[in-house]
Image (cartoon, rainbow, N blue to C red; front, side, top):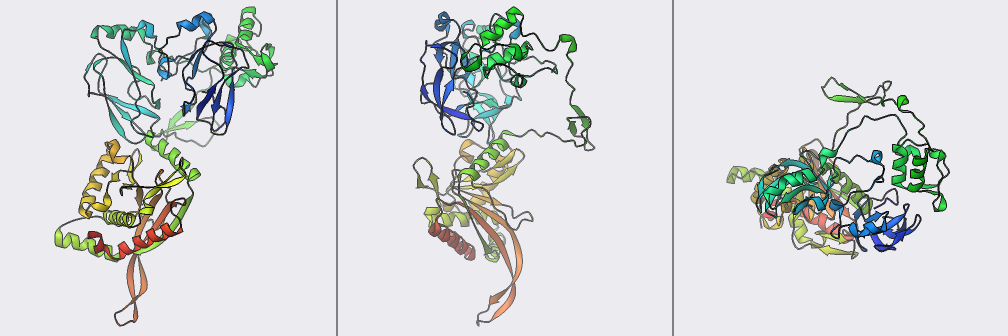
Length: 549
């Protein structure tokens, strides 16, 4: 899947212009691709035959870089393409012609070369999608090793997703023949092969010898020579160049300005480069003796013991790269998407906290029940959503209408080492405050340990973020889609205000107040809804015992 726009990360196959078996010339339109901007034509820069379409018409959300078709140079090779071929796990990208051994390209660490014809009956296990928003994951730990017997329901490995570290259960029985993605492998795309299993233990050795996985990865010392990106910068007589042609020029260190393009519209073809190599034209601009290793990036220890990287010996500013967790990456992407696509509306109001504090004190002294301020806030918000059902809703983008939730499920923001998690208190309006308190403690512990189950953090109808334990008086939060509202809770502060006495006179008194700021989707929280919800919330805090009804 090509990147047809700077912001394109995935695309939809709108229509195939060529069918399997068709001859393809450089400049031919292969298919129409729907990007994030428009529907564009995908022009082929290679000549050959379309052997196999891997992604049919109508396929949506195909990531950039995922194989969508297989081409061959010789028409007779079409029938040699396996009929079962179809997806990332079966495709090995062609990067250089077979007749030039020295132009072989080293595989990426996550790539896997599987020749199905050389392997006994087997099953390729792909990276599973363990949450609705997961598109890649990290292999945290393998609980089975190569050669182990696997039963249905056995835990094969632990996978770090965008939400938590989850166990991956096997749905087949057999033997683990080959691990393709070792422990610690990061950013493995959903569907990408991570292991191979076989039914017969006698086939394990055959699989190990036939499959080239991470062992095929080779490290090379970087050389200060022209990179692929620099090929385009050389003065040349061509206007277009294909990826494989660019690769050949870089690997053979050819002078691109001496190459002549024979393709349409000035397209430099792979055949042009091969002809130049065989004839000795387009010789290397840098001889082997002139090659020098690129200067290595120096790393030194800072006073704190952490490594500091310097990209240039004269650069005085040092820095440290902190690898991000999968959870934080997804949070960053989704919150950016939220601010870009949801019309945020902010409402702020102060509530008197004294009735709540008094109620909390009575529960502890008279009934031995210890609850937090946040537990009571959850209950107050849940009752407000129950009384104003229009606020317990979300905006359906496809239908262009508001959808009301059937239950009141409150998502609670919990800070963990890997990122912010939002475990859910389901049916919070129907639970007692003590029950909510117990459930929140259990969910928070599981969240910090990375042991939340999918049903414990997926869903939710409304969110609460409480920073009252910090010196934060007021803040705004970003809506967690597809929800339409999230409440920011600040700390309690004491104020001196006039308070009416029973005889009608006013006297100064110390009052504890807490700020609440609602971030709401303007499409759902219209004037009437947002006013009714804030009023219901105020009423609940002013009369805390009503929450027990």
